[in-house]
Length: 432
View: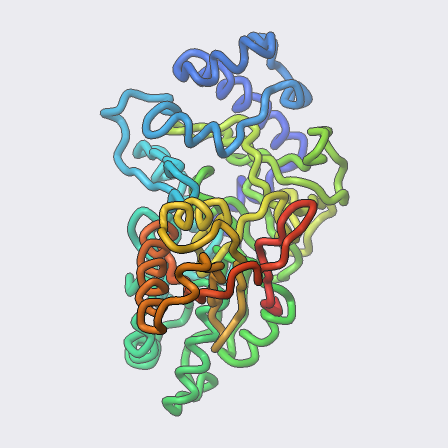
């Protein structure tokens, strides 16, 4: 099903004209209304009137995530504060969070692109969508909610967690579409089987899964255990949340909604724009966002673009599922986790050294985080109950900072491997 046939099947020449017009308008808006961007554009010697073609985008400056934090909370607003109707933020795992502010027009845009996303799994007004993404400052829950409302579907805003109730809702309310992280869907499948649920007898037929990396093998496992079609979706808080790109029913790469989000792929080291099919860092420009628009945002996600026609009839460029990252960020149950934030916490804990290792595993279909921390010689000689109390103390501090639980294991002094180069902070044992 195609939700917005006019825009999703727009000819490439017509789409390019629309993008060119929207890019020129965007540059003029941020230059006139956002001091942060006015300074960047003037430093690059760029006048808004000079941006007349899509090719001119390569001369515009990039925007990095650290710059977004430096403008916290309202330094990127391109409208009067009174026009903002909703705020979402990142978890702020490396300090100040990234703020995404929405006007009513932005909320309408979000609803539109999420309606397109849900339509790609065949969602209609007759569907019951069980929304197990987290609600709140995290964008996942409300993004799916707005899209479901736009389509006219029955949305069950159960949010994340409470697995026993999730299973009961699946059974009792006849949910036809499931929205959650891919790892959580497998956990639901396992708990459901333990309770004797036969998923083949449920009306559940499709799922929209995102917010964390997953593979084709994991897709096959999800589809086999839940008896549904699993669709990969992509988005990020900085841009709008979910709704930037989505697979269609062909499950052959993700269509980028490029009438609103202009994608580029660059060499992360040089910044050089790469051609279709070349792997590099994904860059996104928000062509129509009003509240907090972004020029050439560096997502740090590694992928490539493909403009060959899709059998579904949509004409938009497609991106391969995310292959990796250009930084050391981990995504644990939809939450961004940076080693630097772990280190920041440990530096303020007495009795431990700033030598640590993060171990990520997938247990019972869910990502689990363990932080191994070296003790000082003094702490190492203490009683077991003292060590256990120290582990609980660090776990509480990490949970407060990371917004996700991490098990802490204190280890002997000098037992964490040292390196003459960059320390190996992360051991990722997940089989994605």
